[in-house]
Length: 139
Image 1: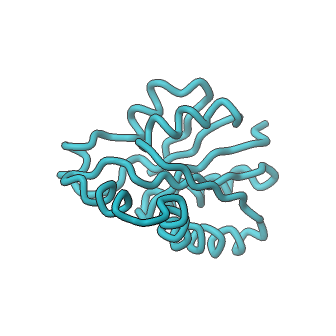
Image 2: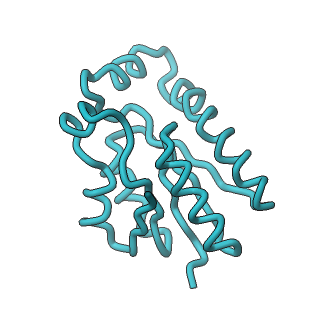
């Protein structure tokens, strides 16, 4: 039985599906939604824009709030409260660094545009291959 689940999220439909899967299939688990800010993007726009902010951590939290609001809204439909966490860095490395504290990771199969996936790489694939805990990939 999974009691602690990490759900990495961005603003993609697949991330929403991952959270929905965790909520539906593990209603008694403690679910932590992780948003990683400042990771690479196809043209480096996300990281550059964040780096130009005066207070980097505050800016990352502000950008994550929209993702967290959507996650909380979905969790409310299942009468579940979530824990949220913002981290700065490369998405797959950050997720892998946090995975040890959980029983499983539930992640969306992909996000972003085809160009993002080609240039940045597939975060879900790397997490799936290198995670120290089981990974459930939602589609």
